[in-house]
Length: 527
Image (tube, rainbow, N blue to C red; front, side):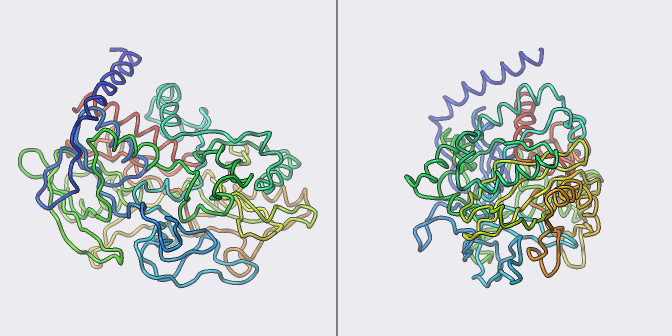
């Protein structure tokens, strides 16, 4: 069978199964003692792709998600809190916020909040804080929506064992279509007040001879125009993003997960955390699941069996779980690549102080639309990011993705029962050096300086965090070339843990496209 015939045949069978699936009864919420054909651990990009495609192929799927469903408005009538006013909904089991920008105009901006299973997890490891989405939809709930496909010439360094033609001819287009990727209207962008900060970023980039690119997004850009015009409720234009977006963003619950549920074959159980997976007789797996209350307490423990388990808890969640299961003897036959190859996508932040004649705007859309591409020459792609404070800051702010070779490893700490990550803050230096290839030149051209008040006292670089965790169960190393875990037929990894540390751009489109590639082969060969 040729590759083209395989893709066409798979698409035809999936479509036929989808029609049958709509008539199937939806599985119940997970109960103690249940048996499910497929259990998916996590509802982010990889888990959502797996759930949809398996259901369309006629398989009943149960998705277990540690976070909340985020379908009930709070006291203010909104589901999600605003970026400038974090509350109980904002952070995962913290009593004080941990915002990426810890300071502003010399003052600390974090505040006390009630402990709650909120939407953003700022998970601390040695040397780094990893920001992750918590809820049905995973990272799609809290990211900036920048849907960037890597340049084709860079792909070989990202996933060297994956066929480039398949990805760019089939799976990237499929992912972009399903995610609802669209482009901002440039004519509108050129005059929109909410993107003045983007136009200032372009002017400074181009005057220093850098390539400036408008990039696609999963935010509904037609809705954005209506927001700016004041004809619909404001969301991005009102600064919503970091703690969820109430209107225009096409997050996974509106795309993949909506289609998956419509098959009648997918159930999603929120506020449940998988703690153990182990083989049992008959080729099945016993899975221990803890039910959580909104204060993080365990309210029940359930054991279920599954014929197959897909790990899709995100790079950190999947890597920590597999590392623990191998070390504690639940899955001892996992190979020694488990936990290795983790990276931060080269993330580093900085701000620049502009002159008074370069205001960036008091109203800024929280959804970025552009970046500075210096990957070929300097190893950096810098997202021109907003500072939606509601006041004029005369500041340009950037999240850079850089070529950083450093990789960390997860390991099990038997004395504490926790999984550690050996990342070192000093490993961010290559990212800072790469970012400086852009911003040192811009500052020299414009006669401007770096802001020193955003990440602490007299601190230029936001080198303490990542939004883009990748790796820990690397494709074709910890798994085969399609995500099957070595040593255990029926166990799969299908999320960002497969990607070894860097994608050269924002990673979620690549995670989605890789999941589409892998699940197509798994359905064809294993089911």
